[in-house]
Amino acid sequence: MATELKKKYGLLTAICMVVGIVVGSGVFFKAEAILRVTGGNLKLGILAWIIGGVIMIISAYTFSLMATKYEKVNGVVDYAEAALGGKYAYLVGWFMTTIYYPTLTMALAWLSARYTLVVFQGDAADPTSGLCFALACFYLVGSYAMNALSPVIAGKFQVSATAIKLIPLLLMAVVGTIFGIMNGNIAKNFTEAVNPAVFDEIGVTLPASDFDAIFSAVCATVFAYEGWIIATSINAEIKDAKKNLPKALVLGSIIIVAIYVFYYIGLAGAVDNETMLVSGQTGAKKAFANVFGNVMGTGIFVFVIISCLGTLNGLMLGCTRGLYSLSTRGRGPAPKVFADIDKNTNMPANSAVVGLLLCAAWLFYFYCASFSSFSDKLGMFAFDPTELPIITIYPFYIPIFVKMMTNKDFKGAKRFVAPLLAIAGAVLMVVASVKAHGSEIPGYLIIFAVIMLIGVAFMKKKELAAEK
Image (tube, rainbow, N blue to C red):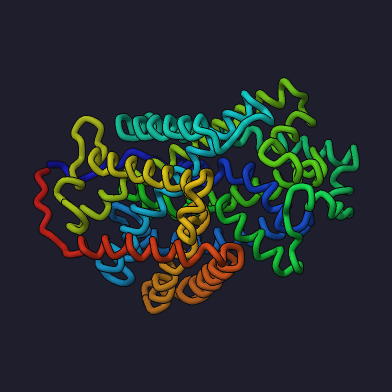
């Protein structure tokens, strides 16, 4: 039974993994949501993108310092183990495997399906339809098959999809900004308030203050920025990981923030704020059509779908390695089974199957909680699984950052300033989440506790005999 993964990814793939996992649906999906929570205030929206981005860069930089010291099979779990021991690392890994990876992955499958329907059905596209969820299942299985059967092809697709997904973003950032300056849209969107009647029309309550607006908006950016940590799941498969993974985390994060902010400004040049608010899920498509024409606009929007699928591919890559990273440490259910590597594909095949099943389970929950009559029956247990896991992922980071400050291997600012800033960012993310999802949090935390207690039952370490 082989239990070791080969070094098969270089620096370019690692950077594309960071950019490719993060850049995808979120920037298209959340542009309208951020306008809503800020009351149509474009300046507050841009500030929220910057704040969320700075938090991501600081967190990525802090973890990149850890990456220069530790290299095993799953970055964030390795760092947790080095800082606080095997049991804490197991709990972090169990959470990532059962909640964090699959909730983000199923959300990307659904969003990929949603945007596919927008291209073919326009305003008639229904994100709550059975067709949308059936297509989401198809995308999940397709992404799983690519990662499980041919990880090399999956890596090449990640690089290609990252290049393709930058096309619509950069085009809108540059051409949309020029278009907006010429037609006065940018000046209008920055200076004129949205008619309050628009919010009555779409059933949205205006924020009580700029403070409330910015907190809610930062929380909304989280989904667009989240996922970069999953790039550390291929730590064991990156060539010269101690050098290349830190570079990928930092460079990738900076690229992402720059792209998002400039895209958001370009979008403001393509359509006015009121149109974006009223259009909802088709707002981004209308923006591309306004700048590039209906035919070319639709063609470019196809790149948006490829962008989503590229993100889905990166997330699925992390999903398939979830149980494997626990099993190689002799923990979790049946570690000998889930630490097994397929000789033909050099992939943890058994772990990959469980990853797919967990994604499917969370997709079913998402349907029941958000888009069907079951949501009323679920009551307090109906919550948004695309954002709420940040309530628990950032608190998991904080002890690692605290312990890092006691590690004499790090010197000066790297030992104290970086971790302190990362802790402040983590706390801000949790506060923003509480403010944005207050009523949903108790139900989520109960389900989180149940899942973690199930994990505790498999915490005991077992001997893992591996034949190499």
